[in-house]
View 1 (tube, rainbow over the protein chains, first blue to last red):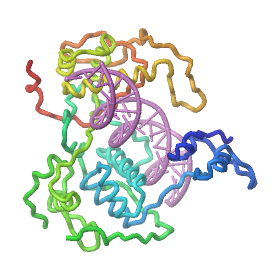
View 2 (cartoon, rainbow over the protein chains, first blue to last red):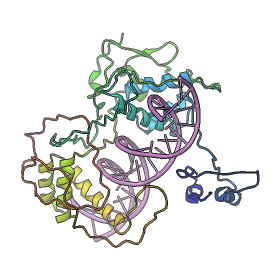
View 3 (spheres, helix red, strand yellow):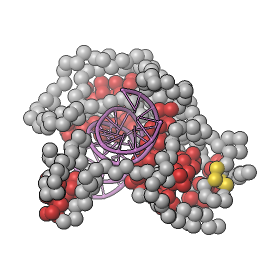
Length: 174
Length: 174
DNA sequence: GGCTAATCAGTAGTAACAAC
DNA sequence: GTTGTTACTACTGATTAGCC
């Protein structure tokens, strides 16, 4: 069924399907609401599917290198990294978000993976009497927890398409 | 090797590039963290970034408990609550501001994201009551024992790492 | 100074895809 | 089925603008 949130479409934000919503475009003239809206608005670039970016090795290298330095870059840095890698800023942001989550998840449980349900949410915290950082003005949060030397999976899946981006030209011109 | 003397430029970055660990960002440049950040930011710029506080359960309990009593405490009360929780006054203030806004927003519409469908808008329900306290509250000195229902989400995210800040004795004197 | 309303941005959870 | 990773969403802390 095709009842999706047309608001996103109108807003031009992500124009993304809600969870579980599918397009059954059986033949080639079966329009869902979004397609209909597309016709109306003309420009509403709807995506039928979620596009899963496949990072190239060089992109991953750059991202990981930056992640070591700063796992939580601000907007400007994000844009710069996006520029370097040729990725969009949004994709770069998502990668950093996921990487932070990954780091959290893997920190402390790097056992040789059995298939067990490793639910190491590190709950505890029943009583550590607060003391959250009260840095209000300007400071760097500091990498949370043990920042190991990056041994997360992070595999590259042999990108099918080759990207030719100026990966090295605008780097450091001193 | 990256022997730069401006380590104080980066305050408290925990991610170690210890033992002279460099990393290559591009084809032939090896940079350490300090050099890298300087190149990126032009110079020793203390990065202004939002630090998102993660409240501990006890802190949240205290805040919520007080919110029930008085959702708009004045400066003195704010400071007192800040003392109790170990948070800064500013953070406490912001929490109350956001909580008031949350209450307004959520009053009457409980939006659960479990499986689509329920767009429940027929609200009222600015009530509290009920909810035999599940919030574990321990060892907060002077905290009121009555912590009672909160109809907003307000989840606690159990910060995994204990941040030791030496703020046990530098409370705000009054 | 304080407040509200709007906005920005980060985290946790989860679904969607891909490979094993 | 499981594991890994990208993308998305909901919630919420922090900031800003405007007002009193």
